[in-house]
Length: 458
Ligand code: F0G
Image (cartoon, rainbow, N blue to C red):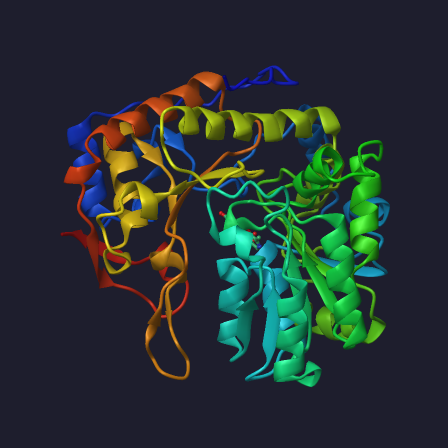
């Protein structure tokens, strides 16, 4: 029986949400072109579209915001953030950015050339998009276990070290301006990466002189997974584990909208002085002066406070416990998910649940439509809509290996009763799954198509 951990907080402010009737939902979805990104928030009962920027800030974060210093250059808020950055990440330099993809854009602008490769365990879609937009080639080298939803490997986000080495030898280190790893692996189930693997990845990159950047969005959740699952780390604090993690890398990108529990913010950090100079120039052009990035001073303060709160172990035990509760409850009623449950989200294996719908008819999209129609719940497709792309050499459509629907849990927002409602909704969908049909794309942009694509039910 799945156990729900009591929340290590109580609720001081509430935001009303409303249930709508089915007819209203049908009309809303049609208007949105059968893409849940096009819905209005008020048309949704439980919003699991993302855990990004949707968390509830604490009283400490809100009060820190009141002390925000809005000076254009050299604001106190910047120095408070720099202190937290130093405590946790200890890179020599960093710049704030308005969110994660801005950091990725700047990194790619200053480091990546055409026809160059960037390996990772799995890139998230914005990272992939930023690499492709500069003519580069993102390459995913996660371990094979990541593609088997039933495999309970404790660190399914690990990179395959043999594949990484073979890949570098094949394309040549000089064609790889930097290498990455995403912690936790969002595109592959929110699965963690072990310290052992992080060390091995760092060693390979170092051997070939390739700068190593960590996509650090969910670094605190990754640190807590290491504490729970990796021998030798059970007595280390999450802060110590985080520090050990980043000491292995040459830099990091982060969307602070995840583990720093803020509504907006991010950073790009690095050790190399010349790179920092180039980054600052690009930042001034695109985001803002280097002591504020694209943010208000108050945002920097919320981030400084949130970075530390995100590492709090009572919070992390609750956070991972809540996600595990949802995952185990779904398994109890027979819904296939990526196992074991990830850190920030549960990924339903739509390809297996709706095995009668071929990849070309988007089973994940079909399921996300049903979730909304049945229960007013918004999840997101992470399958062929998000990740299929034409092969740059042959033009042939390459489909991802899994068709998933992600139910991302905003931090400190929903309760056990909300999760039970989600389970009940999915149970009803499963009971009539054979009647569910796929969809056809009627419009799609070239990059990042899942945000704005339009569909028609078949
Ligand atoms: N890297 C990872 C692993 C992410 O999950 C995200 C965002 C980004 C980079 C980009 O950050 O949104 O601040 O620009 N993920 C969100 C999600 C959007 O829903 O998973 P951003």
